[in-house]
Length: 314
Ligand SMILES: [Zn+2]
Image (spheres, rainbow, N blue to C red):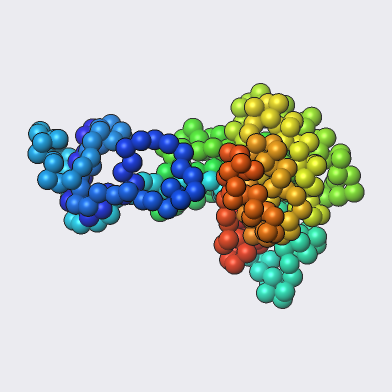
């Protein structure tokens, strides 16, 4: 099907060349005033100024949408989400309002552990249906590409259940979806006193199945005081990388403990959160030579709204 959109006030992000943008180039946003856009079978076939329309599109298609001086911009790419979950955790807001930190809430069984407990009791179909509704919602808000993490399973069965739901979302949705394995989100209660045992389970029981069933594109670790150290993150990521999973990591949400340096060493695709940054952290990430191709992803809203105590967010 061919669709022509006319009378666009601004057609935004009209770049002639496709290249990775860095530094100052990121603040440039090319656009065309009073534009048209021609789409053939879901692919952009042509675009330009309205005065070029007759020349560029001599035969108008049947399906024409008049934008009436509205903007047309590319779909959003949401590179960090936790939209597969069983239930929200609004009850933790009370603790938060009383002044407890995320680490304190997590220490008493809240946070990701609470999500894991809730997820354990929910069937895969139910989990899929609720995630599907959220996916539809973000799609209506303009998201066209999305990354979705596991991390509320925290057991072989639970993590695989989440990743299979994400795989099904990939198959059924028209959105472009990437899946991230976040088994190392926190330590489950059963391994509270045996951290190496859980890391072992991630590496030897979860990863081989994930690789066989092609359940993930990336591997993630919550690198944080009281959770996974930079060294543990490296061990887990290297195991994931041996199966072709690229690291994409949670670092510097609550403390700066060297996660950024370790992530860059691993050639991570991105370092996400970055709420707590030292001068050195900023120096490393602001210099292309020291940060390589690793991208910094800021998640400032995780502190100021629901994200620390109810998914999506942490
Ligand atoms: Zn997160």
